Image (cartoon, rainbow over all chains, first blue to last red; front, top):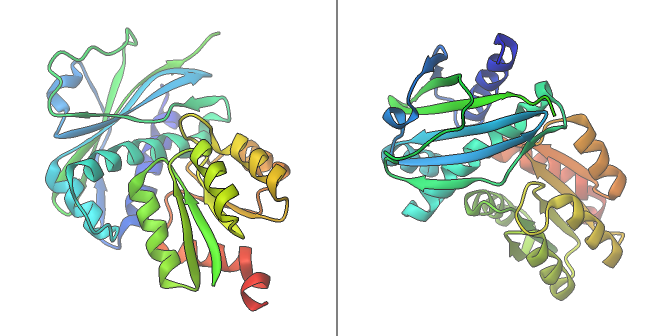
Length: 152
Length: 124
């Protein structure tokens, strides 16, 4: 991934939280990580990317953060099912929005959602894994991007 | 009241949209999480309008637009999707969608899009 592509994800994350409420969100500087498992929080939404890129995008957040986000959105129930749905939807929205940069052949799957720390999770053999830290209302979450351009 | 239904695979988004609709002059008659459910409910309830996601399991929003238009080509469809590229927007409109709202959206964004989409029906 080049800087322009990473910046597209940063912008998309910023847009998501800007629409959520008028409180400031801090989107941190992206950095490379070696092992995804150390950065997974309570709930993780996962989107598979195919087409002109291949790989995976993850959005992972704590229970407290997903509860607060649901309350802010006016969702009455903050049961676990809703919290899991939310991380999938954030991942879907952020990945869908970057098609402005990546084009219509940046194909995104419907989200799947994981709960807890998947200490056996294996990612693809795509070398670079970028993490973009997000702090909203003093609560932390991470967007993790493991994609590369597809030659096929 | 104007009959409307909400189609999105995210229950959180369905609830958010439903809340905005019910705060306004709409009767929510359907709530579907994929295109197959949406077409079934559309046939039963015959709403005047629907909000429709694109990326959904089993039947996506693009195919759903075609199915809905084959049943009622006067139905008003507001596509509410994260797919922010122009070709997707153009394809949806060409197939019969009447409007497009990009996720993420605020309550005010949704209200404005619905008002624009349904102004003549609401006034009538």
